Image 1: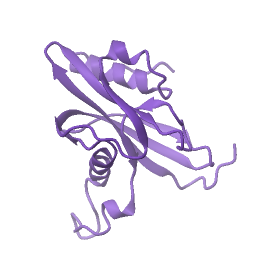
Image 2: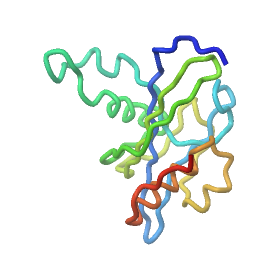
Image 3: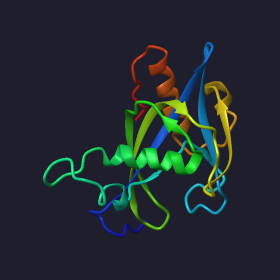
Image 4: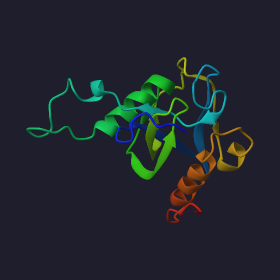
Length: 166
């Protein structure tokens, strides 16, 4: 595989959004449009890429820096893709992926509770479901999504984060 630029990476983030209903934990997954370059038609969690507009036109946090650019980007992406607001965002793990066009991508995976809103999909997704971890196993997921949701499930049930098998 040919890498376009070995020093530059596209930075993306994803959100495993959950809500507790009685004794169950349900997670939001959405089906990607068939028009997407990477993983068309597969089920995943909302997220997307960091854009310079996520910070460049906002006041700097310090004289030279912007803080929370990834969190702001992720909140924007979730609003755009599924029309939801999330509670406190927590870091889960990082992933490296080569996009089919040869661009290296860093994916930062987070999890957060559902806060408000009704799911309304944008053009990037064609369907959605709130489902338990067990129910999610039936869907054609992007590789790794099930394992990430399993990690969150264990954390939310009082366990510690599990290390993915190497």
